[in-house]
Length: 294
Length: 213
Image 1 (spheres, helix red, strand yellow):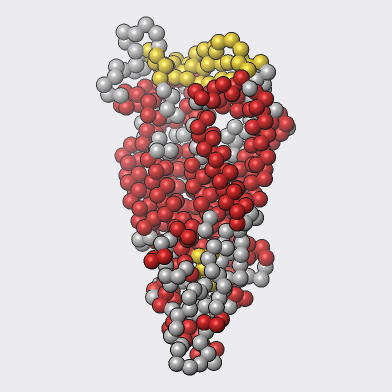
Image 2: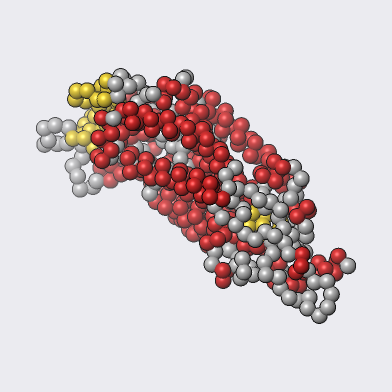
């Protein structure tokens, strides 16, 4: 039985009067969440098998375990190889259930816990990557939506709106705060923009095709300023609509494609979360929708 | 009369019934049009509401039902979002990753000097019967841990080279058909830059060694 409040009969009843709350908890179709869950949970399976697949190997190197704050607080020990394999199985099984919309609340929360634990074991060995922030937050907030079915194209929910809004905020803050951090870490943002970070990255892990750019430091410095510009402007994505929004999403996806081809840095865990900005319910075949007309 | 209308509407829409729609009582337009929510027909159709006559079961073409949030629901969502935002913001200024996933976004954040050096940590191993140490892939699939993980605790590894024993053990377990390394060598290549362009050959130095047990 859903604990959702009674459906309302008028827009005035449904929407908060406060403009910020209307933005913060927009009424969005539950079908959008159902589709977004497919994206997220299937990607989590890909993630644990590839991008963050080092957890099983970490079972061999417990001496390098540097538990993060929550892991220390909860006294989570270093992972063993068997423990990692069991955890992997749990993440995959419950992600499949959650993506399919089976036992939605239970499967969603189990994924949130097991995938969160998996993250502690991939990030807790020294290096903490920040490309997983939005994905982890998506795994945490999606179960709060409750039941959301593909056929719910015509049913909107503020719970769905909040969850997707939080993921959107996490996505843009990944960029915005990385620009802020560049300012903090460098002292003077011009030092970062005029420095040799991309040169440094290309020399350490650049693809062969990108090596000739090492002879063009001016071009790479221009790339650094461009990066700073769109990272600082990324919160505008929260306000963009229509074609502009599609353009912003496409731009960031292309940027990550370029960094992948040049440096092998794909940022896919964040890229997948850009889907939270899109009207995914359009992908639901009409025969699965409530009325068949949506 | 209003009650009567609602009952009729409920009976018109099978999707409003069932376990996931318990308590549903009618239709509404959201009235909300934010960034990406313009895709569905959110306009309620008042004309679809039957007023009288023998055709009350005619189904409207499309309709939006709205599930609002309670004040408590809005409250805890606001509170938890604000708390996460504060932690994330503090994480930046304290420059700590400890609050993952709300840590500092430090990747590639440090400025590099166009006339400085580019350093890269490497791992090599001396195998029996080989004249020179051989460079190994510095990743989890080869030595059980990624280069970035070791670089993040480089001082600790240099101070405690016995940590490299687990890298040797991992190598043996992950490569059962390869010979066991005799010595693990943590090394670093350093390339000098001048105006952003590398000059000369990279210099290699040894940071730590460990005789494998």
